[in-house]
Each structure stands twice: as structure tokens, then as C-alpha cells.
Image (cartoon, rainbow, N blue to C red):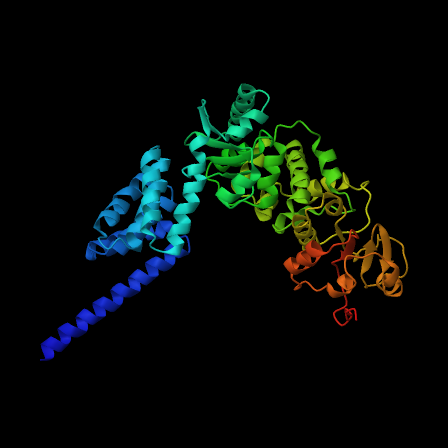
Length: 475
């Protein structure tokens, strides 16, 4: 009896240890520690050769590490051995689809992804497979696309886009030349030809991809773009991704590169100054660390900054920065001159007319309001400014209270309260109802603006405010 109890306890302990090991492996995978999963999974599989979940995790870890050939044996086994046609089979098929695409077998890739969707196993795996069906060009909408393969790029043209392009051959040649130029500069070797999808209809693209174009899926070497977008922007994202051992991207550097190498030939400093239409000041450290700044401000300034970095620091240092784009790494690469480099760049904008500085929340609010507006006249007049600096429109006594601008006329909060009944505003309560606290819903503000019927335009500050200063509501 004692021996039986001992054996039972040993078996229970083994089961507990096994379960713990599985949970730890899953946790590592969820944290993106794929190399650790690849290291720790084989001994567990050896002990439990029939555990399909373990083999699926290992196959997915290989695929997520871009080791597609190593991933396929595990994914193929879990696919064929899951007789229940459940989530294990579905995830196996989805990942097989990605692997086959990378290995150049588009038919197998498409077949696996479509089989996965046909199983309808779980919402998550359906979303994953549907995303790649759209991204890789396997959706039915692509059946009519015209495919033209060149040396480095496979072009996929939505039929109506061809009608909008004056010279199709020149269109493709310019992008092939841009690829050559970018590959030479970044000293990068791209692992496969770039699939370059050219859309005429932004609405069709949004419906298919569930995303605005253009964009690049750099890891997959895929670009989706509108026919009239710049030559080099998205190509830069793909090519620069394959700079040796790229580790960390930041929005300022990554998007700045794409603007700098967009092949438009425009003056980058002038382009950036034109983006500062309402008195924003340039603060590179803040932009570097704050990824939420709207693109219409960040992109032009970032492009000009990349030009400045290359001109002042040279190509070699810049390529080192490409690998790890953090501010901290830049401090090491450009030490001890980074502060000086940034200051010289910011001084280029000292003569730009300035009303006040906007903070990141104000920019986000302005961006959201613009995206909600469909009337071009009203859309052009939306501005958010921050009155926490000294340079403000000299109307009345400002202090820490909001500056309100309606139809290009400026009012302090007190002035507004006195004159609000004579002003044409979006709604009677709009300005007072929008608080200046940063937990206010940007989307709610956008909806109020979107559904208003008058053509009045409001500007409101998002800046340093005294916490106990009440924001009164209209009666």
C-alpha cells in the first residue's frame, strides 16, 4: 500500500511539474522570448512526444523568429495530427500559410490560410488568418489586379490605378531605381522581392485591409500604397528594416528616414516649416520620446532632422543609429555632441512665426477632430494651441485660463463668458463643456464637433491648468 501511495505521489508530482513547465513555456512565448522557447521546448517534447500544444508553440516560436524552414515540420505535424479540427489545427494552418509565403510558395500559403478560415475554430485565429489573406494579396478583390514582376519588386495594380498613372513603365522604373539607391545607402540585403500593391480606391483598401494606406509590412516585404504616393517612403521602411541586426525602432527616426528618402526632391527644412502653421515649436527630445504626436507634424520635422543628422554626423554614425534608434543610443553614438546637434537643428525654426506651444495631447485632439471632419472648410480651420508659454495672442488677461479662438478671433475665458451670446459657435455649450483635463475623451470631443451643424470653428488650449479652476457648464 505504501509503495502504491509513493508511486501515486510521484506521478502527481510529475504531472504538476509538467504543467508548470508548460505554463512557463507559454508565458515565455507570450512575452516574445522566442529564443528561450526554442531552447526549452525540445526537452519537454522529448518527455511528452504526443503533446501537440508543445509542438505548436515551438513551431510558432520558430516562425515568429523568421526561421520558417525550421517551423514547418512542427506545424505540419500538429496540423495533420489534430483530428478534432480544433484550434491547434487552425493555428498550425495559419502559421503554415505565413511560412509558405516566405519560402516562395504562394499557392500553399493561400490554401493553408483559407483552410484555417474554413475551420472557423476561434475568433483570434480567424482574425490572424484573415489579416494575412488581405495583406498577402489572397482576398478575392485581388483577382482583377494586374501583376507585373520586375527585378526587385512585384507590382500589383488595382485596375483603375493604371488609368490614373500617366506612364506605367516609368512608374515602375522609378521605384526600381529607388530600391537600388536605398539598398546601396543602407547596405541592406532584402531576403525576397517586395510585393508592391498599388490602389486606386482608398475606400476599397480600407475595406479590405482594415487600415489606411499607404503602409509597409517591413518584415513581410509588402507595401500597400495609393498610386499617387511618394516613390521612396514605404520602400525606405522595407529596406531600412534589413540593416544589419536591427534591434529597436522609434517613430521619430523610422518615419524621419522614410520622409528624408521619399525621393520628392523637396526642401526638407521648408517642408517642416510649412507644417508649423500655428506656432508650434520644435522640441526634438520630446518628439523622440513621445510616439503619439500626429504625423502631419512629426513626419516633416523628422525628415528634416534626419537630413541634419546625416549632414552633421555622417553616414556611418547614422547607420549605427538605424540599428537601435533610441535617444539613449543616439547619446552614445553622437557623444558628447548630441545636445549641440539638436540645438542647431531647432534654431533653424527660430524665425518661424509662433503663437504658442502645443503639447502632445493637444496635437492628438486636433488630429482626431480633423479625422472626424468631412467639410474641407471647417477641417482647415481646426487648431489646438497651448497657452502655457509666454507667446500668446495678446487679448485680455490670460493667466492660466483657456484662450478661446472662434472664427479667427481670440478671447480669454472671461471675455468669452461676457460675449458668448453674440458669437457664432458650434453649439451653445461646446467650449465650456470641453474640459482642459487630460483624461477627457478625445473621441467624445470629436463627436460633438462632427455632429454640429454650424460653420463656427473653435480653438481651445490644452496646457498647464490650475487643478482647482472649475470649468463651468452652460445653462
